Image (cartoon, rainbow, N blue to C red; front, side):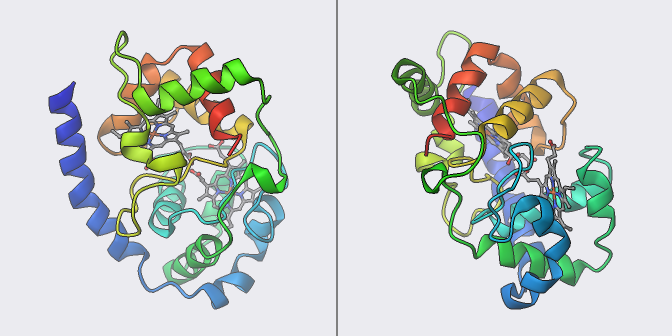
Length: 214
Ligand code: HEC
Ligand code: HEC
């Protein structure tokens, strides 16, 4: 387990530099107009208008760029989003759009929004424990180690670990279930799929509840 994680982190360091370079040079002002189509689902300020659409507000630009190109290359598939990704043909436009959404006030369910947590204390505590400490019995590494404090990602130079704190609950549950089932496989070195496969449905519900309470 430890060896695998060290490998993941080493991989993350090399590919994160690459992602940073790929997403660099985006113009947030230009991206505002260029992202009008995207705003119809992901919201004008990146706070989605439907719980099945993820919030993009404050998300790492390198991560946004990678996901859209992964949809374009069919490395990640979704009936709604894949055709939308296909409509972005100019990579400078994509950099500008990513810069726009990432420049918005970071996603938080505290400002309102969809897919909020149940707010049940016991569930939130169980979700927090898994997030911070992982699960020794099943060999799950604490989410905080990669997704950072409060699920806000790591420092700005690290574009590989997405912001998940403040994301909509429905979307978080769907991604973890897709990663567990192996229908989403675009994560680098399979590091997120390996973890999701070890999570029970109860744990997924609890951790998504905790993340969407932020
Ligand atoms: C018709 C609604 C719709 C439109 C328009 C749309 N999206 Fe999406 N988008 C979605 C849905 C639904 C998902 C979640 C897919 C899944 O469940 O895997 C998604 C996922 C994403 C993700 C992945 C986010 C993450 O946290 O992994 C990114 C990035 C994204 N969209 C960017 C865009 C951009 C850029 C545009 C405009 C070019 C756009 N979307 C237009 C519905 C839409
Ligand atoms: C070893 C590092 C690592 C650990 C530990 C980790 N993750 Fe991740 N996670 C990632 C990476 C990398 C991605 C982005 C995958 C990609 O680029 O498509 C990701 C993606 C995700 C996503 C999808 C986000 C989105 O916007 O679509 C969710 C949800 C998630 N992780 C939840 C968790 C939870 C919950 C835990 C703890 C149980 C956890 N992660 C532990 C590395 C990790």
